Length: 392
Image 1: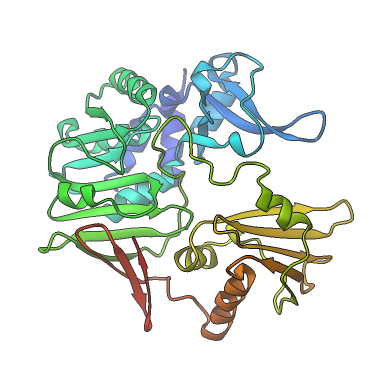
Image 2: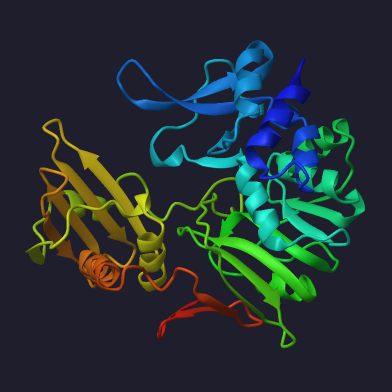
């Protein structure tokens, strides 16, 4: 594609703070379009439904240039259908089964993770692969022999290997589940641009003494930065920048704890609650936050959040959990206190309101900047201001 170099230089100027930064040249000289020849975007069909739409770079070079050299995430796989394999006009499954399962992460966020890792000229890296673009940036910054990149998807590894070679890079690429056994070797930095439910013990074994891991925790906005300690664990903190990545997969698609219409979902929509109250706070959709969402996930993990807006503007937020707990909160206006119905063993909305009260009283939540202590088995304890929570 013509003129990609100028587009890459503009991308570098917009994502790297100073031209003299060691990351400026990697961004300015890496052909991102090479790693994303096709991608998925959101569109609205004739029935007003939101659907995935295939974009093909070769048949629309203007969009290819514009989108791949913008500081944005490009979805490359939805469900089990990679954009590379889709036919013209083909759309992935709709609903909850049509979730994005791989992407090319926005460059600024990749650089945020790399900067947090404090990569040096001699660092041996273990990275997550995806489209291969982030791996290409690392190869442009270091000797490619120092870079190992992994993905659970054999096709993604195959495609990335080919595209990296076209860009002049030949790092070590392996197919593996990031949360399990890692490629043999010792690494100074492990940087994950997929979210993990907890820090895998295999990472701590693979890290060199004093090595650093940088990752996000699934279903939260938490970025953890931690250095390996002499006992085989790690010590670090929650980074000030929030980030969200797709969760690590263990196969072709995600295991769906909550299918589109489970019995609990029917209950949450229509049942009278065992508890019916009026919340003291306006309606909140938890996934739109990062600190409240992250705190709630640590305290009551595994909540499925859904929302609906009726034709008259009335909004309803739902919370469901695999233990049978559910909550439904409805309000006519954005500032109105919602009526809340709750059932099951835990009062999910009450847990949320306790966190919101905490935020109002203290002005922030202790998860911000919390200390993170990771045991050799991966158990992570977050602590700040007398508060603590453990993730296993």
